[in-house]
Image 1 (cartoon, rainbow, N blue to C red):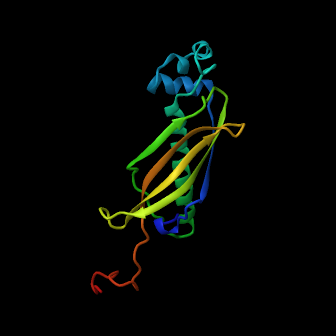
Image 2: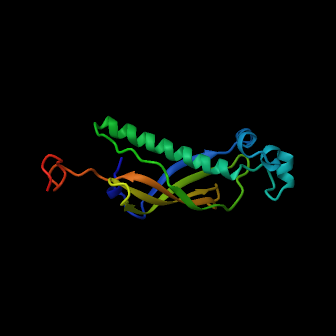
Length: 171
C-alpha cells in the first residue's frame, strides 16, 4: 500500500471487470431502483435502452466493489511482507458522474482508475485527498460510465530523523 506522497498523476490502476447478469440487474433494481426497464426484459426492450438495463447506481456500485477488493488485496500483500499498510479514509464526495451508454444484461464492464492529483489538507494533519478519474468500458471499448472521485488518504508519517518527528524532542 502506498501513502499520499507515493502516488503520481497519470498512474492507471486496472480494477477488473464485472458482468451484469439479468438476475443481478433485476435483484439490484428491486431493492434500489425499481423502474420498469431495470425490472423487466420486455419493458427494457420497449424503452430507450432497447433491453434490460442495469441501473446506473448498480454500475457505480460494481466499480466500488472492485475498488474495495483491490484495497483488500493490497493490504493482504503488505501484511504478508511484514509492513503496516496505511488505511484510506472516507470519500468527501465525487464530481461529474455520468452514465454515457446503457449497460444491458450480459455485458461485461471493465473498470479503471487514473490518478489525476493529490494534495495535503490543512484541516486534517497527516491526511490528504487523492483525486481520480474513474471509468467503465464495455467489450467494444466504449466508455459507459465515469466520474471524478476524491478520497481521504494518509500521508507518510514523519520519521524519527525529521525535525519535529519526536514529540519528546521537538525541533
